Image 1: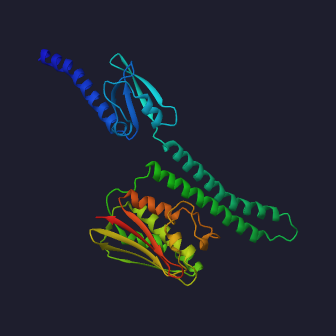
Image 2: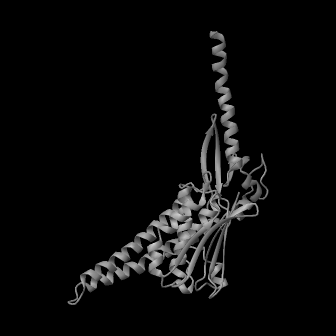
Length: 322
C-alpha cells in the first residue's frame, strides 16, 4: 500500500506539469492579444492565433521577423521575461496598427464629452449662487433651481459609471431569462409623474408569457431609458407605447412614439454617447440613455435600430434571439 502511494505521489507532479503546460499553451494560443513567445536567441517558440494571422513571416523555430514587427506596430513592443523549468523565455506583446491610437482617441473624446456635459449644469449652478447675493433674490426659487442642477449632475455621473460597469464586464447583463411584461410595466409606471408633467401618455402591451434573455434589473434599465427618451423629446401631447412580441425566431421589444420625430441622419446616430438631435439640444438629459440601451441589448446577443422622420415620431426596435 505504501509503495502504491509513493508511486502515485511521484506521478502527480509530472501530471501537474503537463496540465500546466497544456493550459499555458491554450491561454497563449486563444489570447485576443498579439503575443509571441521567444527563446533566449530570439527564435519563435509559440504565438497566439492573432499573432499568426497578423504578423507576416512568423514561423516556429525561426528568428522574429523584425521588418514585419516594425510595420505591424507603432508603439514599442512590451517584453516580459519569464522562466519555464529553469529556461529563460520572453513574452512579446504587440499592438496592431491604429489600435492604441484608436483607443486613445476614444478615451480622449469620451473624457472631453463628459467634461462638456458637466460644465453646463455647473455653470448654471454657479450663476444661481452668484445671484444669491443680489438684494431681490428669492431663496425658495433659487434652492429649487439649484436642486435640479445637482440632480442633473448626479444623473450624468450615475449614467457614466453604469456604462463603465457594463463595458468592463462587472455587471452581468444576461443571466437566464425573465418574463418581460411585469418588469416593463414597473419601469414605465415609475415614470408616470414625469410623463404627466411633460404631457406624454405611456402604455405597455404584449404577451404576458414572453421572456427576454436579460436579468430583471437590466430589463428595467432598458425599459426606463426607452420611456425617458420619449418623455424628454417626443413633445407635449404625444403618446408612447412599449410592447413585446414574438417575431420570427426571436423576440421583439419595440418602443414607439408619435411625437416630433427625428431625421434619418439623426436616427442613425441616436445610440452614440452624448449625441443629441437638434430637437434635444436644450434637454437636460445625459445623452447616454440610448447608448446604455444598445450596450445592454447587444451584450445579451440582440440588436437595436431606430427609425423615424420629422413629424412622424420615433420607433426603436430591440431584437433578441430566443
